[in-house]
Length: 490
Image (cartoon, rainbow, N blue to C red; front, side, top):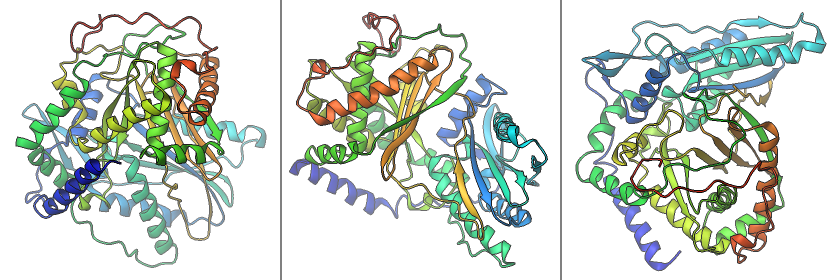
């Protein structure tokens, strides 16, 4: 990082610290309906566009071994729903505008599905079938509590705990809060004690009101100007060669393909990042952009990435949907070396982090994107890399094992999620089943590993010198049309 960049970062931190008290989020005085946050409004709109879907559902599953107190677990879930108002909030129209309103009365239960009498040979398959079915059940945003849970009994001291949530009330950061509070509350109730959880400073509705006031005036102008400049002339579509035609509208049926990269790559990724003042995320983003370039033939690649967007201290302990999506534009023209691609990715990421507050739907609006139900606007490929350790679920007296669960949808054409584990880089590729065959994605995962090894092993090699030819492609990448207008695919 240059002295100028250090000075700019320090100045930004001083401004944020000085503004903390000014920008503190107050509680809303009345208990009536309030506007949705910008992120919630985007989800609400998409739910009206495709009613009865499950693309905004989330699911977590855990195997529990030992003597389970199911009543204590149910009480713990109810306590969390009581603490976090957004989990018991519904969404109604008021003068043609959506509003959020906590339910006056609500309940949550923990039904038990007994699979212990099923034949052992097919028990695992039946468990997976039922978990998938329950996880795909839609939520009614006008009436439902946004959290559901089910226990599957496999044996007297073996259960699987399935939790389903709706994205309008829950994001990835919320996982850590939910699991921490559930662990604490269960342990207390199981020993006939009261949980000692601190009072929450605000509720989600307070944030929603504050956000709309905060993102106004000069700050909004600054954010809009930045993203117009960053994305105004970006290609609206990444033209990946596909195995099947696009459906109109998209079905969003998808699948996860596991990815496991050698742990030996991690030291090289970290070392290269340090040498270039970049994070491991930036290294992996740059490598993924190179792979997309090799696949599509486009030297201007836009990739979406989620960002926590929890800059205020009051939001650190609150369950809710705060995350925003930012578009990372990586230019690969001129046959650069990977070191140069990384520098471009780093610059893009730093700018995006500094301007992450602008809601993605406002970016779409400002770019005058022409909506096409066959494509996601602005970007069609998503990327996320996580370095934080997984927050464990710790239930007193139980051995808890997290289970992977694939609901069977894909919000994007492709999405790559990576997580840094102690001895490997694990994760998965999520892909649209209408567009890609399993064998194609299997080849893509292999090329990802090969590309990453070559790039970090010799970052001064130009990207056209890579010994990579995506052998899984059915045909050469398509010709990229010339762009003549913002937001139009011509």
